[in-house]
Length: 214
Image 1 (cartoon, rainbow, N blue to C red):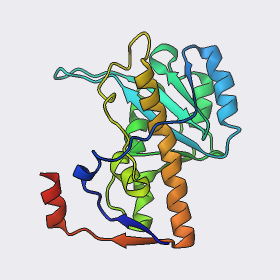
Image 2 (image 1 turned 30 degrees about the vertical axis):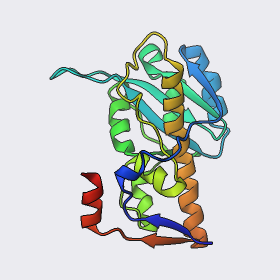
Image 3 (image 1 turned 45 degrees about the horizontal axis):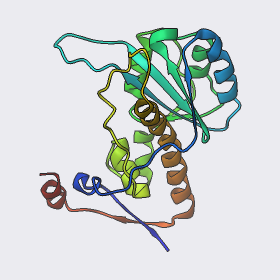
Image 4 (image 1 turned 120 degrees about the vertical axis):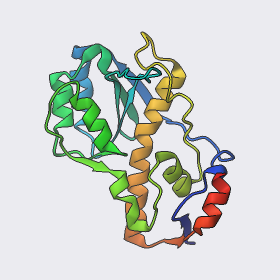
């Protein structure tokens, strides 16, 4: 049976979908010593999902440095609290690695934020926004792409919370881990569909998309 996907996914349809959450183990990294063991594990994997979080700014001219770097394998997600550790030599080694693909979305912006903490030469990163077009998807948001491919919703409720807080809440941890882990799912599913051709693309008329987004 062919999988039906859409060039654009109606935002209004996302609300009724079941919520996706990271099912694995989440490890919070708060010291330089902890980063070495975490990076050693991550570089032993064959694929990683990546994302960042930054404390939101609510005043004009106010800017914060990136607070969190989340890097996930299929089973474990490490939350590197950069507001406490900075870019350690081990984290720099991870970001510069050229062996293990690191999958993110709109990763150009994340790289710019990370480089404001420390300069490094970006390694083997793959941006999903440059991949989804292979199967005709035009949406560029993680939430819409995931809903399109898997029929599940990625909750964004924790996005504007305080990522510089002394202690992250369980909801923040799950949110951060889910965003990184789902990048792996999307990348592998797109590659599967490209390899098998086992999908049918439905093109939604522009007027219908606008009506649903009102």
